Amino acid sequence: MVKATLSIIYIQDYLSILGGVILYYDWLLTLDDEVQYAWQAQKNTGVKLFLLNRYFSSLVLRKGELSGVHSFRSPGD
Image 1: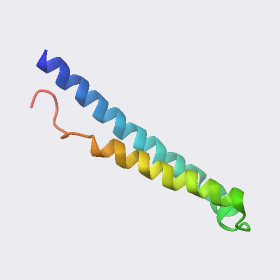
Image 2 (image 1 turned 90 degrees about the vertical axis):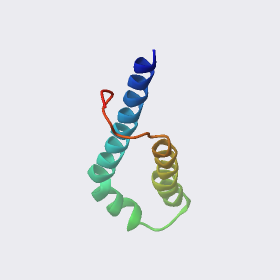
Image 3 (image 1 turned 180 degrees about the horizontal axis):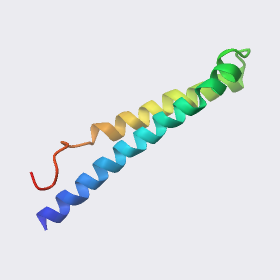
């Protein structure tokens, strides 16, 4: 029972990390477009909302997920 519970915790930890990797990979893939269309554009409400959504909400979500990550040992350790 305990071993199964630990396995579930480890799976959740690694999936949380995978989500962060995908998020940062997406940021890198779309950075050129973001610089061209958001950072160099006139700062209107739409651009401000885009940047707020892209960075603030993502960072808050990642902080919450990473604060729940346990140690990175394998289940057999």
